Length: 342
Ligand SMILES: Cc1cc2nc3c(=O)[nH]c(=O)nc-3n(C[C@H](O)[C@H](O)[C@H](O)COP(=O)(O)OP(=O)(O)OC[C@H]3O[C@@H](n4cnc5c(N)ncnc54)[C@H](O)[C@@H]3O)c2cc1C
Image: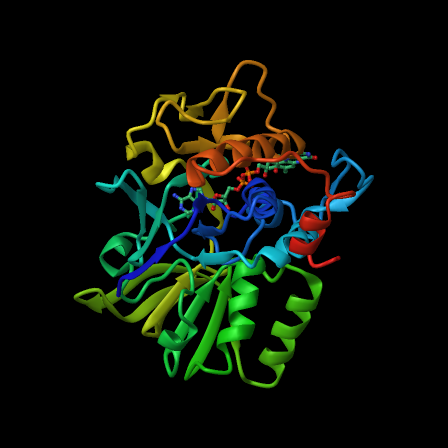
């Protein structure tokens, strides 16, 4: 189903820099829609190091990746950005009126005069487990992400993995599944302790089955899974009936469809000028880890600066007939009103 929205700025990437861009745009009364392939905001901070402390965010001597994301989400709340999560920004076209039309893989179309690419190292793509013929089942009965929980209702689900995603989805899908089995190659997990405890509780209550095992083969027809062959730690094999398989074996980062947007790339990075952080294509900006310029540092604080300047330049494109007045949040009552503090 296609959802078409019009806005001032479309942002690819809800990492820390994409989120802060919403703030800088909001101060200038520019509305933003963000697209991220992940199911939650935070980019690398929440996906790769949610509990690690960061020590070089100005004014925050110590903050974890998750805490920084939570604070950014709180900071942008007054501007009510729209998030299109679990969606890949997959194609870009120029409309006859000069605006950009960004389309996602689930059919969302965002039309805006400005596109800000805050895509970091690219999109997080799930690692495919080494099981022969798995491609034939992907998107039908093998899924690397849960986009709609409802589509797993009353299914016999098999989840493989030992990290946060495997455990979170075991806990969340167990109540709606007909049966749910978790397999991992050892009886130890890399997930938050409270999730491990909860999963073990569900196993004790008989609501989830857990096996130390790995998936060797898939059996089914026309992409519809009927069973898998599991192998235990002792190499003994058995057949396990299931009609949905969710392998959570981690993520890798790939630039993905942005490489096809016709931008001037240098080693998979978007070249920008340092006055506006605009690419060589007018109306398309790049901020954060995805851009390159002389002296570039892949630091969150540099991305924040880039977002502030890109927002100012975006204003002139979105509001060509309006003047931009430089204002401080400390002293401008109009900015304070926008922030809901005046
Ligand atoms: C272990 C580790 C420790 C770090 N420590 C520090 C530190 O101490 N201090 C510091 O300043 N920096 C640190 N960094 C670097 C910092 O995390 C990055 O500079 C920062 O995350 C860049 O932010 P970003 O918003 O540009 O991109 P990201 O955080 O990478 O976010 C980009 C987002 O874009 C999404 N995306 C990309 N392409 C698409 C697409 N086509 N469709 C939909 N979504 C898409 C991705 O899914 C992702 O969520 C660290 C990095 C790592 C890995």
